[in-house]
Image (cartoon, rainbow, N blue to C red; front, top):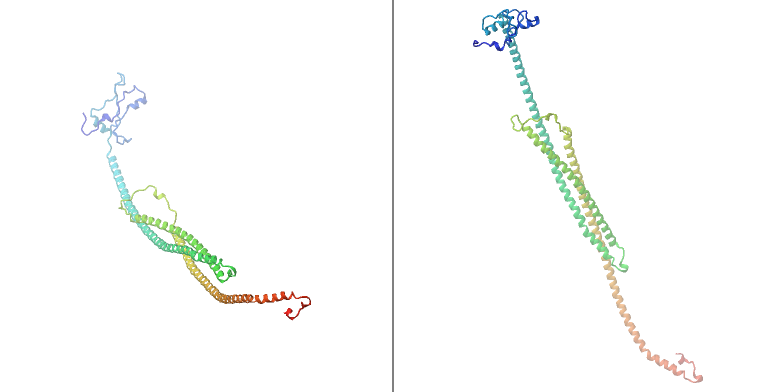
Length: 411
């Protein structure tokens, strides 16, 4: 039976070997001397009482082989303790070594703890500074985006106003070109009707010349207004392209502003933060701040150029309206003056001709009366002619020499 608190020797001691003195070779005899070891103990080569103990057994040896020594009559646990005991110096030295190791470990742990705390404080301060810097950069970025967005919106509003003005100018040009058809048709009809003049009245007078100039002027005005309307239409398309570019840029900046504002409002306590593996290695940027601002600036400059071209076209259209209106009005006035002059000339000539016609008719009437009187006079002369012819006929019947050409015959 084992004592309480002791280790059972049967589980730690080596098994006995059947050997005796002189019965086995020397190598085998050396293996017969097996000390009893306990696990976890350090065994020194110095001398300790009861270190070596020879054992023998009769299980593997013949009957004549008997053990040379017998184990002492003591319990197995006590025997193991005697074989594995340290000295006091070893115990003190081991304790001192453990104390010095513990003190060194504590010192090293304290230093590591202080370094760790200092490192955590430094990294915390650095992280806070970097996060504040990133927040300031986002704030500055939001200010830049807001500035360019406001500039683009202002330019877009002015471009839209200019585009509406260009639409009005285009409609005015098209309507004016259509309205010119009415006076052009009038002038052409005047020329057509004047071709119905007959005889000497079919003359190439100032009226016809002014009508031809008016027709040419009206057709030229139509061509000019239609050409300018085509240019205005092209400019409107350019303005719409520029408007699309500005709207696309404003839309992109609105999206970027929303995203940056969302990023600006993120905090360490926000709910929408999470880990995204490998995001620090992804660089999807396509521009730098200089090229970014230059892109918006180029859009604004292009829009300003388009507005300047539109203003020039509108001024040209207004000037064309004024000049063509003055020219058409002047030509219309000249044509009307030529018509009035020609009508007055024709009226005067008509009056003169009518006066002469009246005189001629009077003369014709008097001539006809004279002819009638002459015919009456001729009729009154028939009887005297008959008398004379009868006398001559009768005198031809005078005989012989009596046919004398006397005064009565002669008369």
